[in-house]
Every structure is written in C-alpha cells, then in structure tokens.
Length: 101
Image 1 (cartoon, rainbow, N blue to C red):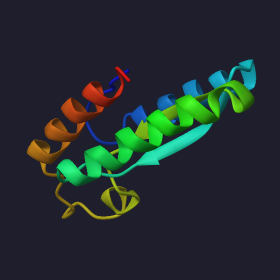
Image 2: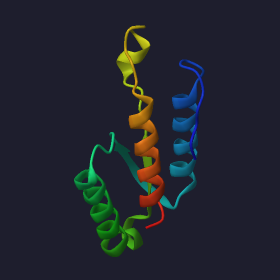
Image 3: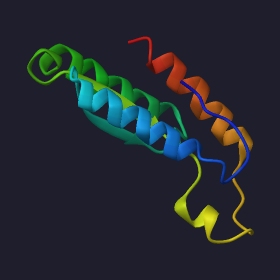
Image 4: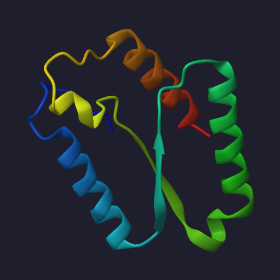
C-alpha cells in the first residue's frame, strides 16, 4: 500500500494503525522499517534478507510488514526540511520490485 498526501494529514498514523491491526490479527511477526534504497547494493541486501527470512523463518514466526516512510520526524519540526521526491519515487519503485519476492 502506498499512502500519499500533504504533510501533516495523518499518513504515517494511518499506516501505523494498519500495521497494528495486522500484527494484532495474527499471522504477522513484526515490522521492518526501511530507509531510502540508494543503490543496487542496498536493494540486493534487502532482497537477500527477505529471501533468507522467507526460506528459514516465515514458518516459525509469520509474515513481516515492510515500512518505508520518507519523512523524517524533523520534517514536522521545521518548514525548511526538504524531501527529495525523486529519491522517494525510486525507492518506492524498488520496494515494489522487492515486494514480489
């Protein structure tokens, strides 16, 4: 799921509530918070982690939720914090590729 909208409307709160409901409902083990995927090495590291988890741990623990929130908490404290939309777009595209694993 991708949530978009202006700063401060509750996207992160809605995402966290959805994650909480998934965890509370069972079948999901935990949350992996991801930072920007800045290069192919970072994408490969995430892919390797997910493949290993799926192979060795998913049956014992359950599914994982991947969380990517490009807005640092400082974005809400200062109007001068800029978020590079191009980096967000690239990271979301890479996460969509990884999500098919």
